[in-house]
Length: 300
Image 1: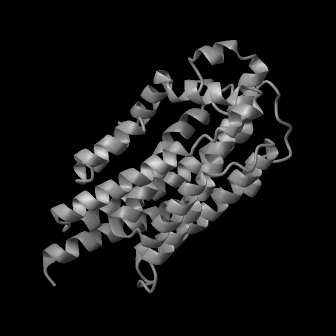
Image 2 (image 1 turned 60 degrees about the vertical axis):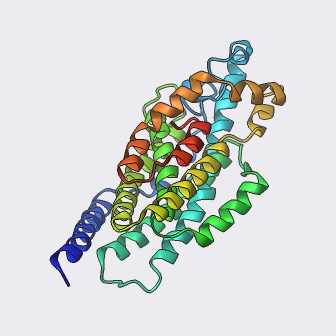
């Protein structure tokens, strides 16, 4: 085997080994790290108000402070519920990718470490939603079926691209939430745990994408870029269920309309996706059709 062909494998192994060392040094058990018995301060938000889909709209100005607090708690629970949905997809894709792989390799071992992390994260999000009294938000039926197909068919850079998109978008949001002094400690702590551990998952996904795209031809690049963009659109469009507006006592039809036209929130999403778009561009996964989908999702 040539030096050129073995070098990328060694590079991937080195990255995975460092990630395994990091996981051994800095990981959390939400059952112990989160104070599940602490009462929820009635005056604290579920997420930074600036991240609410209605922040800056005329409807937001009309809402009472209690409605704003209630809305943000339901919004964060909807986002967490979407996270659980995609983490279940993620786990199946990673397991399939590592099926009968060499268990002595560091990338195999880190892949299983990531799956273990995701299981804990899903339980953590489920408990947080239950604590806030806002569990039961699900993607649309069409999105659920698309997700079923994606987890079954997506492979190589398409699978890891979908994983990266979901993790990057949530990561930027949670970095703000974990620092928000007006945000519930429950959300701040769960966000911190997720940010720290997902940073390793994102490094792993980027490395897998680089390796799998190294020999990809133009047709494969176009196909994969489009599939990842569609997955991104489905994920982002399902983050906030319209039921959150009814939970806050709002006119759902009006709230959905104002959220859809909220240019402030659109700009916030675009800025939060800048690093992701830069990486996809450098990886050759930002074709014109893909860019059109990202623009429709206000990610570009």
